[in-house]
Image 1 (cartoon, rainbow, N blue to C red):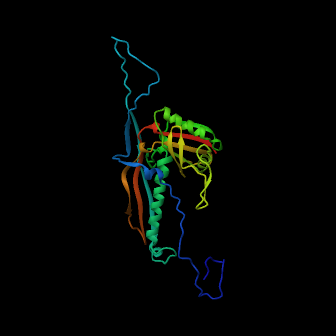
Image 2 (image 1 turned 90 degrees about the horizontal axis):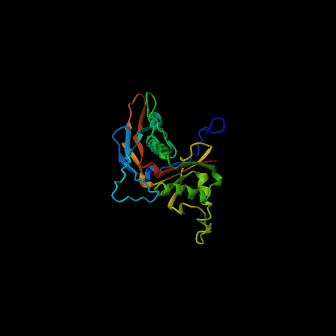
Image 3 (image 1 turned 30 degrees about the vertical axis):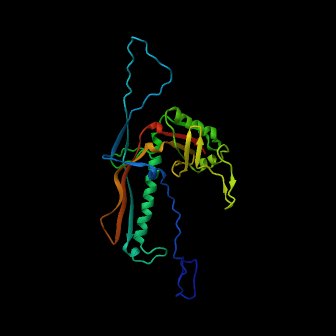
Length: 297
């Protein structure tokens, strides 16, 4: 027998291949936002919520005696998002299911597990960087991601290699000035490396017991509070920009219209098929709870 046609050959055709019976997967999983956010029920594909801000005071003001005061109301604002149906299909031919496999016994069970992981990754990507599509005709609905809700705290800076502690402090200051104390920072790999180089917050040390060199920052102590720094795969979706998202964790919710589950699909041949499916959206309680900053790579 030959592992690959033309690659190897044996004089004795009865020779059995040497085949390892273990598979070591590398799971590219990213679920920080969708896993750490609280959930809220959703009852329609268009999900709305209200924000009613308290106006910050910028100057001292008094009222003249025996005169009427001024009356000005700030009306609430309506924010919305749409639900996104996420499906990951599973299909395994009966012959394939009945065949012996290296590394696993049940092909169907293995495919379901893999598709569940893919489903989680899709939810996370949409929850962080999704673009709102209302869905008309044959177009599928898609949710607006976390970073899309930033409107006040948005700016473009220079190259990502120029990111300094002072620049990051300025971004967090903008949030504080707007009335919000952001506690989480999402960054791609490049900006995460830059932040770990900030000498104001860390010195590279050697662990005497384990001889490990430690020189990273996962918690950033700024002038405007303490922030968790999370390296995230889906903050950057192109090769041009390096993006940085800051937000308040308690202001971000996952809206659930249909909890993720498995369901069988109609059998139409000599195979089994089904899908991992769920319908979700993102709710950001206040747009000032999110900051979105863009730097060139």
